[in-house]
Amino acid sequence: MQGFRPVPLLGRRTWMRRRRGGRRGGGARTSVAPHHDPRAKHHLPRRTNAVSEGTPTPESDPVAIVFPGQGSQQPGMGRLVYEHSEAARLVYEEASDLAGMDVARISMEEDAEALSETTLTQPAVLTTSVAFLSAMHEKLTEVGRSIRPRLFGGHSLGLFSAAVAAEALTFRDSMLVVLERSRLMSRFNEGRPVGMASIIGLNGELVQQICEDATLSSESRVDIANLNLDTQTVISGDVSALERAMDRARDLQGRVIRLKVKVSSHTPLHHDQAEEFAQLIREIPMADPVRPIVSNRNSKLLHTADDLREEFSEQLRAPVLWSDNVREMTGQGVRTFIEAGPGHVLARLVRRTDRSVTAVSLNDAEVEPIPISVLPPESTQAAPS
Image (cartoon, rainbow, N blue to C red; front, top):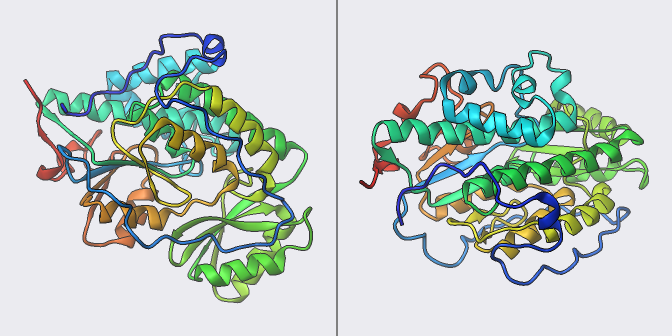
């Protein structure tokens, strides 16, 4: 296989034609997602320990490209890549046409409050991530280098960027899906005050107990949404329960940070939205990824279009086990992690999970506009002539 190619930006069919049943790859549709009762008892998300069966993909470099999700947004997050890459500007142009709004302007917005709106944040983060990816390949091509990543990963929303990078979704379809995803989540939040918070310094079992104690009813519930590190957990749910859990975590000497998002991602609260989203996902054309993508839910390697459909269908109500994702990737031989998107959160989490690996962010302006020079030699190779 040749080096990984810059992502395609234009779909070949219209949205409505695809909704009528056109699909690429993957064969049969997935079954309807299983029922989850929002009132169900809390359970600590099951951790994974073993590396997935199978051997690493041949003819690949020991590299994973990973993409951040909602919460990584920051004022001016798109300015750097927009100003220094023609490929990135084309991504923003395509995104604006698809979304019917100026995604480039939103991504350069200096008002943090404006960036907290889910219907703006999600398409902007997706676009900025794909823009950084395209800029990286543009810069590598200029110096005659290429990357053959072994795996792709993404944190929540970042899995859609990963699917674009792995050529399982066109950028067009990923944008249309993310727009609908953001609308579904916002519609739920309009009638229900919800939020998310990060708890640092307490282990997952203790945070799970805190969530159980803070949950008083199905109308005042909080759950674990992300396990980012063994002692860094994100909780999500109704504001009333969330604030009780935050207070209790502080009492136990945990550091608590309220996240600048207005969603309750990855919890049973989103049961109905997950069911509706699953119906949409079944109609979206997908191809088998050119390289495996790591599941947020169980860290298994997703090899087929149907694997991805199942993952996306469950995503809104299933927690993200990011620390396990990192361990899976290192277990598959990954030694270099490249974060493509706004911020540096994933690169920092990777380094804290395994200090023996290299993790770099393409958003590291202190190095250079698109810092391909910091990539270890073993992560790239001469581009095929």
